[in-house]
Length: 477
Image (cartoon, rainbow, N blue to C red; front, side):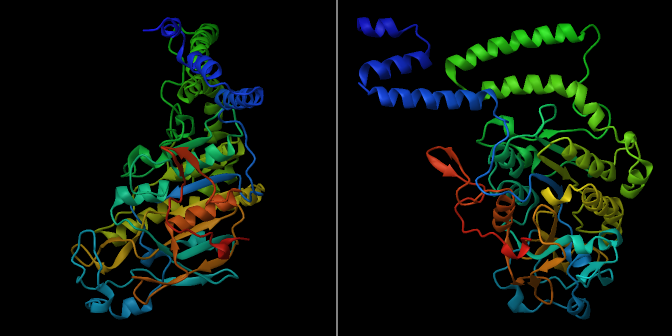
């Protein structure tokens, strides 16, 4: 070991790198100054990673509410009326339709199953909707329906992860994390990305649906409960008053900041932010989720009851959180996997969700929030035109055609985009892949989806990946 090596042994790594660079590389003063400016920028970003950022293009939406109908709703019972499918109910599908097709569970040669519910046209737009959606019919002219969605996955976890992150592989940043990374947060007292789960179980894709992947973890979603404390352990235990908590937090954060200054790890900044956020949430979060303060007519419009957890109450919470500056709210309602008992279960699902979804659109519009709040409704894929289960009462997973709808945030209202064939099997017009949906959402948020990226493992990583993706201009107002 040289004398010079010995001198550097006990110097912190960050300082060592700077001293070695200045001493050994002979850089000019201009480069040194530039490096100091860059370091200052990194330090500022680390100190407040959730600071509000201005996107490169004029955004049409600044907030997002994603109503994720996990389990995959049947487009054939809700949005995509197929009289021909009803006509050929109980017959085998045409052989040419099944060429190269792979189903998740059933034999593709299973018999066709006609739609189980009636359809009618609504509003000036003439949007055709199922009798199961009477409340959505009331806002038919405020939403854009996409009947030509396609995806690459036909099982729940990969399909949900693809819809959430743009990839079937776990470990990628979610749409909410990308949104928070790009725009920052408008609230300092609540998380910028809040997640609820209201179905019979949590989503099959798990926490990866709202994870931050290779982005700093400060951008990941924070799960809220729908009753009691919104986050576990939010209330102080007995014997801990505000002063003791504040003093303890200041001491811990001082140590964390010293460590951050030495090593520059952004995860330390995330830790500091999390501690401070939890402290501020103790005052803000209980009030934010207290829907008992809402007027009676608003509660009635949603079908929500104070103190009773429900999808309806959670939709109302989504509006309350957006009002308070939360950037992205996502509600997972895992209840739509009707391999059997289709008629009963899908009717039950709609009774639990239809009124609240429509009320959310109405409420946002009445408050002037719909203009810059993008509402998205949909699942991970659709259901087969072929039957599954006993008693002609079920459908399998189907990635080739399904339906989603959007509202607000720069979306053209009253539009129905795309078509599928006579059996609702394949898209025949205006195909919209999940990547195209993501590209359109990013565009509405003010980003060029081809340029919006994060450097990781030497690559410019993107939400839309490397596959061709387009902004769906027909959906833009």
